[in-house]
Image (cartoon, rainbow, N blue to C red):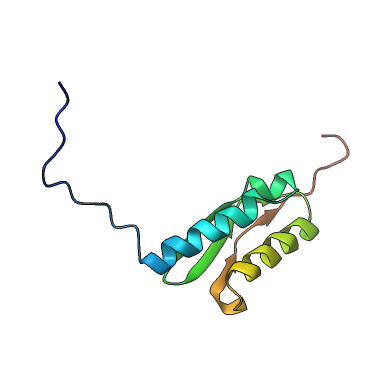
Length: 91
């Protein structure tokens, strides 16, 4: 028999606003028609959306940035940590 803890405390997942913004940011990326954007990571802390991962072009990096700006319309509230790794012809 499995017992549930009576006084379990919920994890601190940030503010309600951050959680809503996180959900919207994740939805914006997962709803993209670009596979590379659907594979990126995003997090929100203190109202700042942070996106990270790797894409193959600066164009895709900019598309991810634009998607986040639709979620959080202040450029100062988006940290774009996406790395661009262009594939070589031999790969």
